Image (cartoon, rainbow, N blue to C red; front, side, top):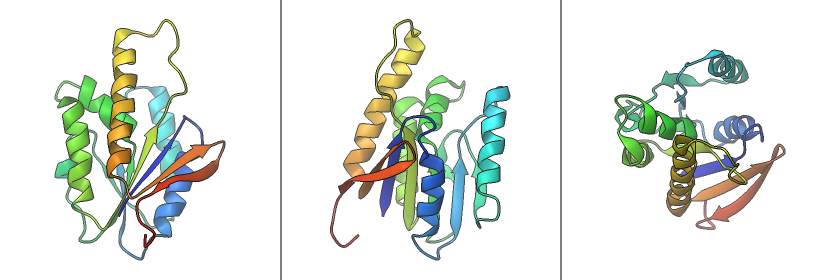
Length: 173
């Protein structure tokens, strides 16, 4: 089963996702962290997320590129945090494989685990004065989210800490 959780920054996606994943099954909980610790802000976010999942039973795997090659426990319950970071890494890092590497990596993960939950960012609007790289990234993230919605069994949208199910593929999920 594949669940996508989308929302803007600081909408409560991560906290909801962790709780959601814990409630899915008694399968092994795996947290796949994709953020690269590139500056003080990134370091602060990484520390915050590590604290959030302390004592929750997650095995943490840190992998910023080529996530499809991640070795996972059999029938695991995987939380990918997050698709936006993964995409940025694949687009802008020296050894990144671009958009296709991000999308294909997520599909490969979907086929390797019992449950896959992916967290991803959304944006309400484009702002004036963005660099061409930033505009390209946002455009590609919107495309990635659209493709992920197309293969997801369930999609939640987060807003102000509240989750709203916006899509469910089948009634038996």
